[in-house]
Amino acid sequence: MIHQLIFANPRPGMTTEEFQDYWISVHAQEFAAKIPQIKKYKVNRILPVGPAPVFHGMAEIWLENEAEQLASLQSPEFVDGARADEPRWAAFWQSLGLDTTTVPIVAAGHGTPHKLVVLVKRKGGIPLSVFRRYALDTIGARVREVEGLRDACLCVVGDGAYGVGEARFDAAFQLWFDDVEAVSQARRSAAYDAVARELNDSCDSVYEFVCEENAII
Image (cartoon, rainbow, N blue to C red; front, top):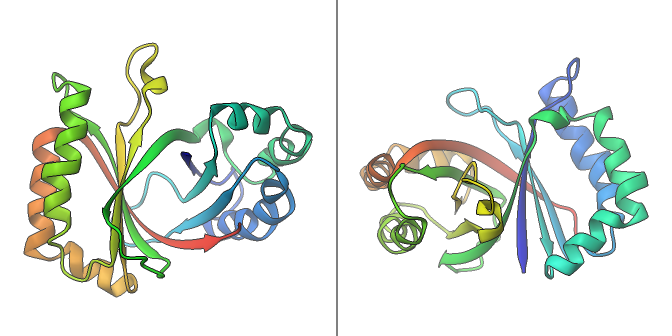
């Protein structure tokens, strides 16, 4: 199963709130949800918690395999619908798409829409296979110790992103909590400090986003 992460920003002249509302209530409902190959679809509001985020929204799309993904990109629902709608709300030239495989770190069936997403790029010189194992085993073990954690996973960017050069990012951690305050408390904890140290030791780029999920499909 392909778990695609799509990060985006509002087009010029549109506020963050307008952008997020349009994505959730119009684009997702009237266009993206009609693409037949999509098995599951969420849109995440990236909340204004902490430093200004580099992205203001994140979609998650699940597709069965690469053949289904290609079919979705060739479908009239995408070409004449979702793709044609993008300039109305998104600065599409700033968008980032990552095809990932999801590996559970804590699989408890969270049932909460509030989470912390941590987008990472490993340091130069660290082999990709070594970093993937380190992220899951070493950083994952630290993640499991964070107070208030309800669920967690690691989204590993697929090998196809490295066909020519390096992928922009290697992985994204997702950590679920009861609410936004629980996310904030966790980020201030000693246990999360240990996660941050592991990330800083192994990564050149670390971006954190506090998100609120909206399930579409």
